[in-house]
Every structure is written in C-alpha cells, then in structure tokens.
Length: 324
Length: 273
Image (cartoon, rainbow over all chains, first blue to last red; front, side, top):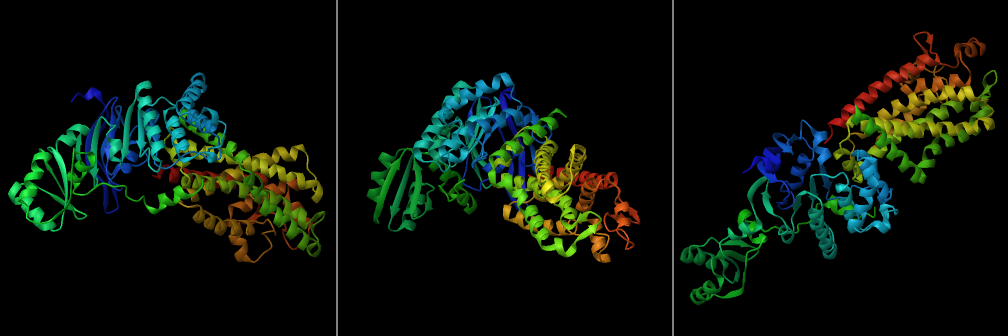
C-alpha cells in the first residue's frame, strides 16, 4: 500500500460512551479520489466514526489523520479541507439558500473573487438556481439535502463526508442525489467518504468497509466482497427447518444461516445443486430462491444478521416529522 | 487570532441577519419590561409618590427597565445556541474552521449590538415619563449597556453551552430571570430593605448595572440625592461596606463579573462534543 496515496489514515480509533464502546479500535485507510463506503446497521458506529474524523468528537483512543493533519491536534486544518453532509439538516431555515451559502463561504474564508461564481456554479449543479432567494423553510427534504451538498462543496474540500446522504428521501430523489454525487466526482477532484445502510447504494462505492458493533468486519471492493461468498446464494424455506439445516451441514458440508424461518447459504453453482438437493431431501420445501450474491448476503454472512432499513430512533423520526 | 476574528464577525453577522428576519424576537425583548413599566407604574405611582425631590416612582423605575430590556435581549444569546443545537445549525458552525472562542465572542457581539439597540429604543419613552435625555446621556449610556450586555450574554451562553432542549433552557431562564430582576433594584432601592434582601441584592450582578444606568439618568452623585431625601440614610444608590458606588465602580464590578462569566462560557462551550 502506497502511503502517499492515503488521504485518511485511521489507527486503533476508539470511542467509548461510559461502559459502551461505540467504535472499537478500528484501523483502515482511504485512498485519494475514491468513493469509500462505510456500511453497517444503525448503531454500528458509523456516525460516531465520522464525528471523530470531522473533529466533532474526541476519540477515547487511537488517532486519525486527514491529509496528514491530526484530527485532535490540528482540527482547524482538518476542518478546512473537509466538506460535510449530515443525516439531519444543518441549515438555517430562517435564511435563504443564498444566505446559508454565504455564511458558509465567510466561515471558511472563501476569497471574495471566487465566492459568487462558485455559488452560482454550485446552485446550478444541484438545480436550485431558481430558488436561491427562497427561505430554506419552504424547501422540501430533497431540496434541502441538495443544498447541503452544494454547501459542503463551496470551500473546495478535498474530501466530502456524506452521512446517509439519501436517508428519508423518496426513491426518485435518491436517484438524483446519486446522479449529483457522480457528476461531482467527475468535476471536482474529490474523495468521497460515505455511510449508508442501503445495500444497493453501496454498489456505487469503489471500496466498502463493513462495520458491525464498532468493529470493521470486512474491507474490499463490492465485487470482491460478493465473490468471497463463493458462488450463488440460495434461500430456502422448509416445513422442517431443523432437518434441512442438519442435512445441508452434514451431507453437503455447508454452513447455512437461519433467520426469520428462512435458511440462507452459498453454493458454487446453484443451478446444479438444487435439483440434486430436492431429489434427496425427504421433507417438504415451501420455497426456493437462487440469486447472484448481493451486498445484503455479504452482510448476513459477515454478521449473522440481515441489514435492514431499521427504524431510525424515535427522536430522529420525530425531527423528520416536524415541519421545520 | 485571525480565526478568532473571522469567527466573531461571521457569527455576529449571521445572528444580526437572523434577528432582522425574526419578527417575534424583534418585539419579544420589549414585552416584559414594558409590561412592568406600565402596570407597576400605573399601580404604584400615586401611592408611592415622589422618592426624592423631582423623582417619582416611574422615573425611578425607568432606568432599571432599560437594564431589564438589555437583560432579556442578552439572555437570548443563550437561547439562540440551544435553538441552533436543536435544529442542527450548530453542527455547521462547529465543523467550520472557526475558533470556539471566536464563536462565543461572535454571539456576544451580535447580541451586544441588538441589546444596545433595544435599550436605546426604550429611550423613546423618556419624554412621556418626563425624564430629560440629551446626547451626552446617550453617549454615556452606550458603554454601560455594552458592559451589562456582555456579562449577561456570558451568563446566557454559559447556561446554554450544555443544554440540549429549548424547554430545559426556558425553564432555567425563568428560574434565573425573576430573582435577577426583582433583586436588582429596578423596583425599589436596595439600601432600604431588610438585611437578608439587601445582602442577596448586593450579590446580584444586575444590581450594579441598574445602579450605573440610574446614575447616568440622575446625573451623578447618588449620595447627594440620597442625603437630600432625609435622614433615613441613603435612599438611592448601592452602598457596599459603607461606600456608595459610583458609575465607574459599578461598571467595573459588572466588567469583572462579565470577564469571569465569559471565560467560563468559552471554556464550557469549547469542551462540548
């Protein structure tokens, strides 16, 4: 691994809240120019990690550097070169889009001669030019998110952190947000560090780190992660699950996982395995599904649990319902 | 240093911009002081009559009401922090390359401007109440309002730096505002009350702010007015260990207290996560 190519280096980073260890001694690097996905269920430690990287939280142990700057010792340097889009809106609703962007430009010391041009250009990019003089309180959730992305880029950051950039957005808006992210990466020389728990979105990443209960359980490209499962994924429902599991384990030497009355396992070639299994299995089967592995399967394999669109905690939900 | 200055002005800029757009707040700070002035004035003025030669109850209360306007306005700096935290904007501020000290100073500056402005707007009532004001008085008043505003903004931010919810902050504010106002000599002179009340009042920082502003209106030496009032001792003014405080001394007490509160506020705000 070429060290000059790392824009983020994380070593034994730990965060404890009292007795609870939210992030447990994680270490990894992020390369310059990649889209790096940070994947895991709610409460796995994704946001806590981002908060430490962007200097909002003090690590309990370990260290992280962003473009060579220590997040603890040189926070202002780190802040200057990162852009952030949080899960929850961080705009001032009482101000217009323009005013929000100008505040940001002043705060980051964007030179005057660059400022207005950059502002026009970014509003154009996120397609909000015609609403630039409207108060943010009149914006929809998707518009707010787009405005935040524009704001996060205003000061020419080298890294853009996106914390669940599409959470709570409808599928169409999600699609547009992704369009913007890809467009951006082409236009700006940007590294993107994002968290998500939507598996289909993680496919957009160059590399993915899977985090579970504060630990990194895998880090690779989406394709490699899927290949690591070794072939096709089979999902079975049987009347007698115990019997099916026993047979799969003993006769075929597989390691099936059981959740919600379904049995999941991988075989090199599903289309030849299934006819043979159905012929030999003596009890009734309810349903069978075979597919190429997805990241969902990877996650299930790694953690023994399915990742799903878990309910956001009640406070975040309440916040989203509030008409602010 | 550059980072402190930039933070100060950018935060002050935003708070002022926000203030202009926020109609209710434009008037909010006036409501309580005006209410007290009108109701207490109408209710007590005839019974109490003149407190000193040429000074009736409304005229006595009026400088204190200006201090109270500044108090209400200054504590809002704390509320705006809690508000920003609750609605997310504080994160945008905290991840920006801005010094935390500068952020606090920006809040204080923005609020100082608003508080002084609101305090001065209250001067419009002077002719109705029958208090004479001139340009020199306004010039003397501005630095005093500034000192009062800075120290009370410090208190507001200190209270807000760890508060998570607006409700919590509002409750805390109510608990603090009432005693702060009633025990500050706005409504009665603090030298002529039972000992326990006198002691508590003299520990109240606002007492010295009210006294200094009142002295500006009654041009100077309280002890002269006081001794003219009769042999019952000092009626006006604040006497600490037998010494009647002058304007400069009052301002110094407020300033020292302001520096302490502000330092604590900066310390507490900088340590939050």
